[in-house]
Image (cartoon, rainbow, N blue to C red; front, side, top):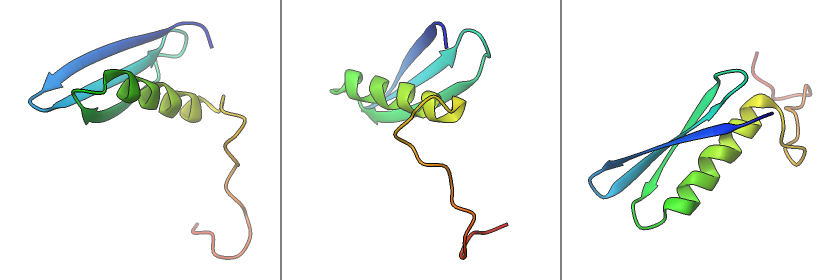
Length: 69
């Protein structure tokens, strides 16, 4: 992963943050309180990393019983 572009939009009492990967143009969005912009930004970046498969702490879904197909 190279650069991540961050877009922040205020929507009343909420902040919408979009994280965009520069290489793939994949994006992830998070919303949260306007008084915690860094927390919302961290969440958007984490969601993007999960989407790109770059978060080693995240386990892949199991293929055992109870899995929906």
